[in-house]
Image (cartoon, rainbow, N blue to C red):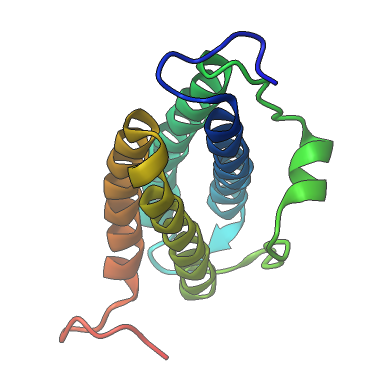
Length: 165
């Protein structure tokens, strides 16, 4: 049960929304750390362009984590953003690329974005029936995350706009 009732949401619905938001919070914290990891470990041609591109991505995702955490609190929950919780509750494999080329990191990062955006969209569909405020928040985040993925893909694409296999 929430610390206080949420106007217009029954307790069961509010709990479902908080649960989904906590999952999104874990994913966004993980993305934030992964982006910084890539920033530190990318090497080779085009290094500086990718290195400098990633810091604004980190800043944006950091804002999203705060937004989601504060939404959980607004809905009477307790956001959990500790490293142990993030590591123990995520449902995907650890990003395992260490020092590597721009192309290697960006291909792996593209897959990370695809997974996170796909999960955001799945939760957005559920929120259409449960909570339009949280739905709207994820719509805005998804738009920005798709733009970030486009930046990553633009570094990978050939002259015809095709991504490598």
